[in-house]
Image 1 (tube, rainbow, N blue to C red):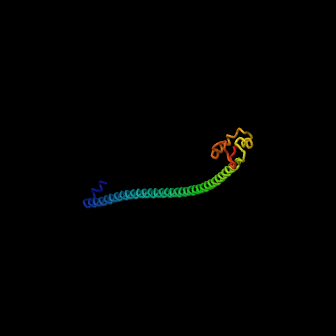
Image 2 (cartoon, rainbow, N blue to C red):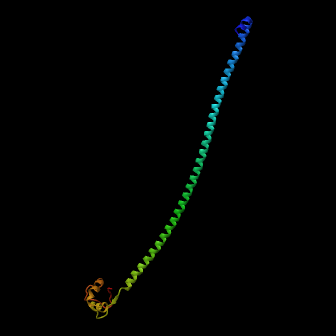
Length: 178
């Protein structure tokens, strides 16, 4: 190749120099353009990957948010059911309590009536004696209680009416012990 360059002369050398220069510039520009294209492609690829990653992340977050919303809805529904159940239970308990209290009040009233009747019956059942002419406490004790020595019991029961056991009046009503 060196021999060919010598034969061409000055004009040939100039053409060779120009031609090589243009080719070198074109090759350099092509290499530069190729590098820029590769860099651009790499940037675009990384941007695409980043965009895909962001899209995947957004989809994941959307799915997670949807799942959380569903769980929150289920939890709210369950909480509402629990609240309704609790309210129903409390209402039933209050109704039962009112019914029991009513029954207890009725029973208490019946017991009070029975006690009052028993007291009245006991008062009515207590023996009484109306003093007749010629009666004394010992004679009344012997006739009514079966033992004359029980006259002090009659006196104690009727102390509010009798001041002196030897002085009782005809027509006086005396209570007798059981």
